[in-house]
Image 1 (spheres, rainbow, N blue to C red):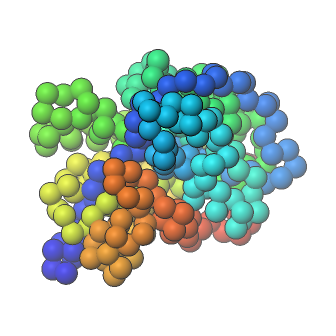
Image 2 (image 1 turned 180 degrees about the vertical axis):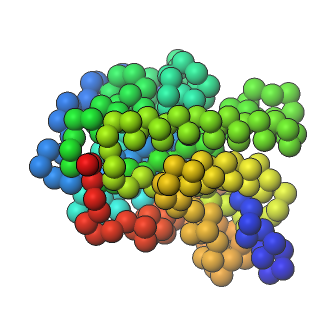
Length: 298
């Protein structure tokens, strides 16, 4: 446990999107009305808040089953659904598997696996359909929906994976990791400013990333840098940090020797996304910061 104690300050890279997807119809436009009359929870980010997990079917040998699996967004539920149910909020979940902090702002910038010819939203429906960037959609919701009570943002892991996919050493150097984390922080700064520029004065929770194995410090350095950048930026905006890393830590240590998969928090390899239990733990972390009746727009 001495090793585990040492890595309490660290985190491990989390794959926020898995696999390149194909087939299925393109998205439709989003409905202009969002949760009219009901308090709304706007969830933004990548595959973790989306609720993504790997299809049980092979893309090559079972293409129809594979495509059918991803064509139904209702099968993907995350901590956002739990929070919405527990807090009696109407969930508007704009998250997209593979979203980077850059593509969140501009769908042509720093594209990983959300946008583009092989992107998730190109071939499969999201929980809510919208044209343009996720940020533009979020701004539209916050400007036109006076009863938003909570916003969560979880972004950054795909910035590291994009770096891994586009550098010769797979983003192994500390300099590349630091540069990626710094860029993610700059983008997150722009995102948080834009959300507040809509006039929204309610709660914004910025969620960072958990460790796949708290007993393995070798994997921790990249996500340590990323989480530090995420958390520092959120606090600079006086927004709330929800630590996915800290939420999983005691359970992973007590029930899995530090391994989040063995503790039942993360799906079996090669998947890296939370189990329903893992999402419940993340939801509890969000709910600890969320009043039952939080203040919304001014």
